[in-house]
Every structure is written in C-alpha cells, then in structure tokens.
Image (cartoon, rainbow, N blue to C red):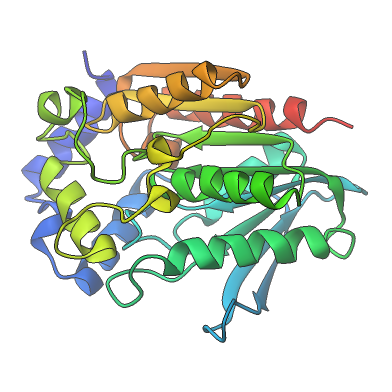
Length: 313
C-alpha cells in the first residue's frame, strides 16, 4: 500500500495535469524536475556552503562542485554525493537541501557533484566526471576540512550507480580507499533485461514510469537504451568482491526495486557487508521528498547515520 502522504501528493499532481517527464524534451523536462524537487523539499540546514569548479578529465569542461561543511571544527569524514535524474536531469541547486541535510545529519563534509548530463553529454561523460570529482575531493580533503582516510560515496538513482561504480574503480586502482557506500534505489542493470518483475508491476509509477526509464536510457546510452558495459550497469561487473560496507535503500513502489535488490544480493554473494532496507510505502525519488513525507525524512536520517557510523574515526 502506498504511503498516505505520498498518495495525497500523487493525487494532487494528477489533478494538476502534471505530464510524465518523458513527454517533454530535455530542457523543459529539467525545469519540471526542478519544480518537483522544490515542491517536497525541506528548509535548508544551517551548514557552510561553497561552490567550486575543478578540472575534468581529457580536456572536458570543468566540473561544478558544491561543498557543504559542518559549522564545528574538523577534520570531518568526507562524503562525495552524486545526484539522481537518470543522467539527464538534476543539478547542484535541485539537490541543495538533500546535501545540506546530509551534511548536518552525518557530520561529514559533503561534496555534491555537478556532472555533465545527457543527451548533450552521453555515456561515459557522467562516469568520467564522477571519477575526476572523487579524485579531486580526496586529494584536496584537508583544504575542505575533511579527513582523506575517511571517505564515503553516496547517491540516489543514477547517482547511486555513479557512486558504486567509482567505488569499483577505486578498488581496482587501489586508491582512494573508500570506507563506505550509501546507495538509494540504483538502476543497477543499466537498461538490460533480467528477472525484474517490479518493472512491470510499477510500470506506471507512481513517480518513475517505465516510459521515463527508457527515455533516460536512450538519451544516455544511445538508441539501444542499454549500458555498453558495467560502468553504468554494476550488476554486469565481472567481480564485486572487495567493495566497502554498503547501505542500500529501496522503495517498494519503484520499477527499479528488483534490480536494486538484485545488486544488493550480488554484493552479499561476493562477500561484502551489506544492509538492505526497503521502504514499502514509498516510491522512486523519496530521498528528495522529506519536506512532505515523514517516512522520507526518516530515510534521510537513516542514510546519514549509516555514513556517520561507517566513516567514524
């Protein structure tokens, strides 16, 4: 059964005639997504905020970062956060409240990454930016008031895939050491088929639809709508061993629920420490709805507490 507060929100959206995201071209779709995020947002937490631009790889445009720091003295743990939006939507402003709350609740320095978006910048641009941002953040941890020995990665939806993929890249490169990963409803199959009945059970939403998933995948991956390799489909990674302890949050009313669960189970099977939590009454996108849904605020606090404990000195 859908959370009562979420059900009321969806009925209001339906009464207002809100279109599905995939029914709009990317630019107006981004505008609508920003409105959706703002409508259920929380008041910003009182933390220190600074915008930065850092070099990208291979001459690509500079990457925008927004750095959130607690007001008390550090050094603090460092969390690099990647926002959701199907690699097509989302930006630093849209996730400002989420990252402020994460900084406040976890006590960590949070670096939010404004990676390039599709279709203007298709695969693997977002992955390249995510990796470059992680490397820069760790190299400049002391400057940011953070401890380079206590580093976590986190993200929601497409951003959760970026988080776990950079954790895989860091494992293979043997640096930087990632101490914890916190992932919220990742599209871990990258558009590939599998035993994921939630795709059909929740094809019509209530928030993310199967049509919009396909829209995102085609913009990022190309006409086939499938990740070319494991860098955007971690379920396809040849080896998942040796990854950091993981918190994985799922939504019961989400077409991505089953592939996210499959990724958690694959991490467990590879010998990793994994905590799986499903919010049965919530739907995709709940991490940005804490201003309207009590359960979503609880999820934010759980997410932050896991990072606080996982990255403790």
